[in-house]
Length: 134
Image (tube, rainbow, N blue to C red):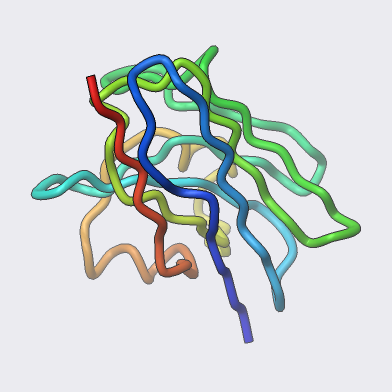
């Protein structure tokens, strides 16, 4: 059984930093961070594959150069280091175990997704709120 538990969300001012953590059990492979602002679709933020290769959202809400995804395999943890946060980064952030083999891992770092499609390609954590004030 796959279980994902996020932590580390909170409230910061614009320009601040936060680090999110995701404790993973029952799964190994492509992992990702997604986010969903109120009233909007869920969007890919960053992915990391089992070989350590990473990819980041680099259009419409780009995080490239500001966010860093990493993993600690020994501890089964996935991290998202977020620097220079902006008010538009405000959202619920979700950790995802991307089990679908229909696309490369990096594919999921972009795009917009809606329920019920979400369960067709990933297992999800419960989410953690990130709020950035100006």
